[in-house]
Image (spheres, rainbow, N blue to C red):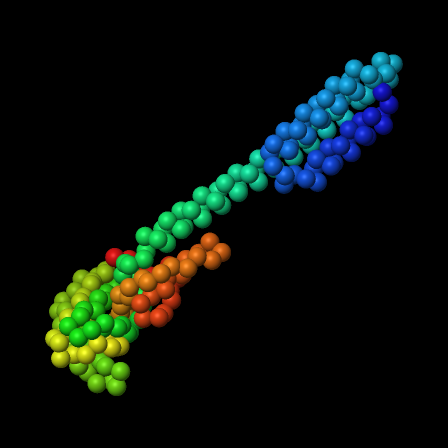
Amino acid sequence: MSSSGVSGLGNSLSTTSSTSTSSSSDTSLDSDMFMQLMIAQLKNQDPTSPTDTSEYMSQLASLSTVEQLTNLNDSVSELQTSLQSNLALQASSMVGRTAYVESDSADLDTAGGTVKGMLDLDSSASDVSVGVYNSSGVQVDTIDLGNLSSGENAFTWSPDTSIAGGTYYFVAQGTAGSTSTSLTTYMGQNVDSVSISNGSMTLNLGNGDTASMSDVKRIS
């Protein structure tokens, strides 16, 4: 058979290449057709002028590449589906829990309620206290924490029923060495719901704020 037969075979493979994103079953059919065409050409080629074997090997290599790409696409699709399922499962487990996010404010739901917070210290500190202020800037309470070691240190504000519900502000201070310094507070907020977009989660918090997972210091 003349070289035009191999050319025709190449055209058939080119069509297969242009549809490499099709399903694996389609690729299987294309592979069977390719092999049938090749066998037919080998049987019917001119014995006095056989087709160069290297051309067939080149076509086989191209077909193998197409199949590998299709299989890779299928694997990536399966991985994406799995990741989305895992992300949704993780998101559902977040709802109703407490997320600690860097903030100087938190809501006291009702009189007699509690507010949770945390300090994350680079080094130990002494005489640590957290001042509590209302929305007018008036200090209504002080939380004495004493001496704290480095790392995460949780605290809870449980005011008496004379303190009304509302938004309160927390200012932490302590002494490191001989220097008095301000400390960063991470206030606990209830996770009301979780939004998923483009493979990332956003926590919708009880105070109306939102936070990404990178903003969260701890989930409890």
